[in-house]
Length: 210
Image (cartoon, rainbow, N blue to C red; front, side, top):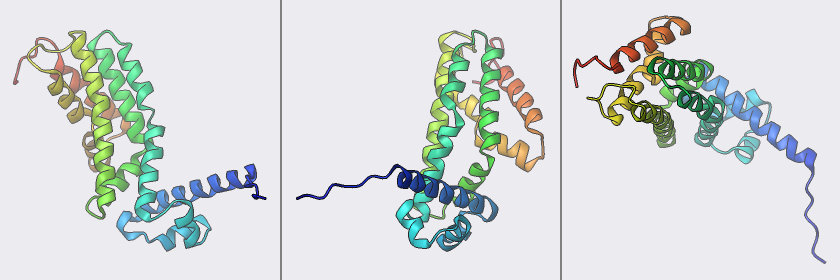
């Protein structure tokens, strides 16, 4: 007689909670100390579990980073922000939505961005996590750029790919990090300035540079 497998909803919930606690503990530690300086033993202690449980529930430190980035992408709500951009029919309104959407994501996930920066060069998985995050971010901005070009809202001497580049320069990780983290600007002030600069750069009639 083949024994039946036993599935307990309570155990499943406990496993999910444990996994979440481990990832959140790692997030706090990575943000405070940098990815390379945090051993799995410290993550386990912060989460209140054994090292064995960390590996069984999530995996290695690199796997934890990958999980953390995946969760953060979901939290960024990029698709909803992009939909708001697509509903705009004027350049200023669309760029304002891009500015607001990227500001919300970067502000809410600033510790994760710091972790990504700290992890660069520490492990090939960390480098891939950065590359994947950058690729997804740029793809969302390129979709916004395509919308602007399709509606002829931008200068006709700039291709869609270059519009995407302008949006990345204006609203990518580095733009927010430079003004807020390095220069000490408020998020609101950074949003307003980056928004206005992007509108000027893309406005019809502004033909300086190609």
